[in-house]
Image: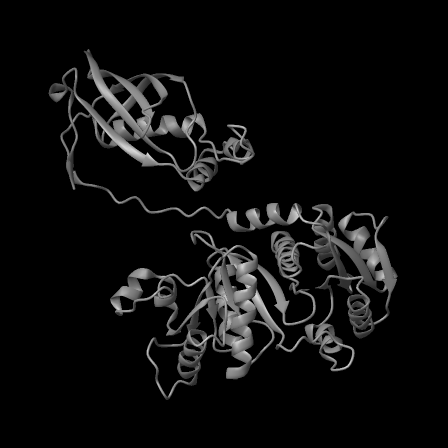
Length: 462
């Protein structure tokens, strides 16, 4: 599209121009980051119409900036300099609403100055949001140009986790055996989840080390149950006993090796087996992705065979349903999107897809093999001629092995700025599996996902 600006000599009273914009919550957060005005964060917590639903409300200056966009881009256009502005605000715009900013030339003044009326209205009901006037210095030279492509911005806000936390806080607190919370990061994650009402922790480990960890994070242990255990394996065994006794509804990993945590759970006589393999699932909140993205298995099964992959897929579908994805779209990843006998993962992917078609895997739509690009990007999928519900829209990514899964999850975390909640399924209760490098948001989200899943599996019973 070609644009032309207008110099003072070309402008006449009555000339007008407009731009339309669909408001999103991320727009308001980007505005907050750029301007230093954090009011959008507080405005989102408001229930503007009394319906009990929090709504993201546009800050007034964000709406006013759309008037600036018309002046600077269209009329008079590039080269315009602000001289003065007067605005009156009548209503508020909200996320999801389309608004239209319009300016109209009202008067030409000396010294290359132009006065314009300005207004912003909501598209649909034509409600007036802002009205006022602006004085600008018109461009001094003529420019004809292609529409400029402004780089897109992605808010690093983790909206999906925020929704999961809000949901989990409304549920009964999950009685959780916390194994070896003997380091500051391990204890703090459990106590923060308790402060949010998501879990009721039972602390198991060396009392002296736990007390020191509490001192390090500046928190009190008063009111929390503490069971002494002088080794990681002893603490893990006590956690399993609590589950079997009905006292614990979940287990949380603290400062110990994952192998030590899982070994007593896998005991054939006294463990927590339910007939499926234990599998790990990352629930990733990736900025710019419109839904949570599940990655599995990235932490337990090293080189899973086809039978293990069946459980990996089924556990992931079950968890995806728990967090609100009604019919999860599962993309089984390989290096290619065609079946290649030389690439075992492509064969497994095709078999898993067929198993889902025949009802051997239930609750989701499974497709594979898919390469990473055509699993998550609709353009890449269409370029390769891939159709169906999953290609380009995958909500669950099943990786060939632990190395690929670990790399993918860490790439999403450290390059794409995602947060990841980690959970192990396949046991009697969800196992919250955090790493030492996890942020407080990741630890909190892991507890929230465990609480939500437990609540669904148990029909809403505590």
